[in-house]
Amino acid sequence: MKLLRLWAISVFTLCRPAAGEVNSEKIDFNAVRPLFEKLRSGEQLTAAERNLVEQARAARRRALDAGEKDPAAANSGVSRAVQPVTPDWVMMERLRLKELRGDITAEEIAQLYAALAAIDVHKFPAEATKLALVGLAGDGGGSQVSVKPVDIPESISPVGVFKGVAADGKLIEGNYRKPPGSGPFPTILVIPGGLDHQDEPRRKIQLTRNPVFTRLLKAGYAVAYSTFRTYPKENLQDPGPILDAIAAFTAVRRLPFVAADSLAVFGGSGGGSLAFEIASRENPTVIIAGEPASILFAGMLTTGDYQVRIRMMGSPRDFYGPRNHDLILRKSKTIRAPVLILHGDIHPLKLMNHELFIPALREAGVNPLMKIFPHQGHGFYFGSGVNEAVVEKVVEELRSFLSKHLAAVAHPLD
Image 1 (cartoon, rainbow, N blue to C red):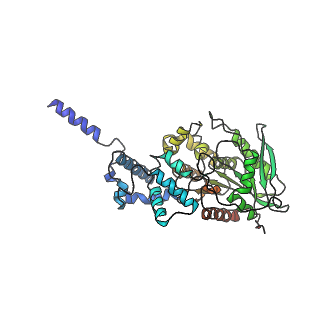
Image 2: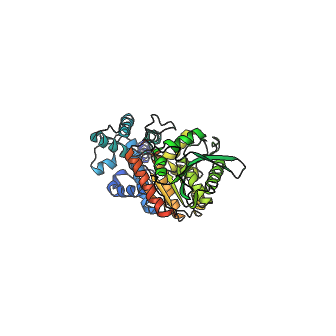
Image 3: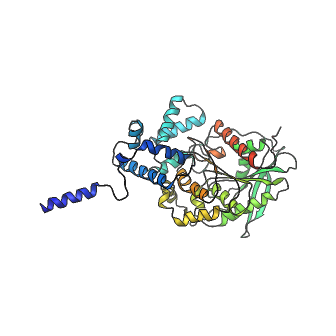
């Protein structure tokens, strides 16, 4: 009898939810769904709402890991077959490429978007990252699918060079194109993503062949393209790339054709983190960030180990502590420039940005304008891995934002 009693106690202990866990049957997923929509749109949640979202996520993960019916699907009337535990990545990659080439059917579009919406990024961060890079030129993104640029002859707008000196004495260099004439022109300083230095041939290709940058030049903006020293893989918090970005900003601001009161900084991914670093130390007129790699800005990512980065993006709360929160607050409280953030909904950076980074920005008094591009992967803001309609929408959003905040007026090229 004593052994039977001990067995019963052990079974009860193993089967009951751990402290702080919530049974999925007690979660009203229909009530939680609007909170996820608020997160995706960049709205700030209350502490109680954040707690409910975390409980719902934990309950859903436990149910799926146990092979049970998807509780979120059960509450929304969507069958388990539509939301498989293991997504069909091959199918999604194939349909993403078809979408980019423009030869996808309406039925395939519906299939793709339903599959994308069902991805649990917490559970599959590596696969979601790979999917977000489909069609992206570089960064291991596989096939390169690109939209045609606006052809502006270099005889009309040649590629120029700017140079500067970083605070530690290192020489920096970048390139630019401007509309004909002496200006002053509203100017956009582009800071690319990645962790590596970009040489001049690559920078020139971006200025002459990139579909977003050439459209901005056509619209009457001078476009400068900077780079930075390669991050040391053993310490991604090394200040060198930040010093280079600040030196590039200073050098561009001093160019004679640049309207100094109309200088925007536009960074993507790691370049988005650098854009925020510039804004925390200097005075750009506006900053624009495409899916910023805020795990850098927050001091979380210190190593070049890709697996560490993947785990961090998939479960940012496991790596985010009071020190990181305080660092974001301290740096962001000095930002005075209006901020525009362009974000897709595939790449796992959305977890860190929507749940931790953007709420911290707002706490510091920075209220970014959020523009969400559904079903778009990493790099869409620079015209990578997208179709022409997305490029035109990105440029439209950029021009709308810039026209509201830059004093100098952009006059489109004839």
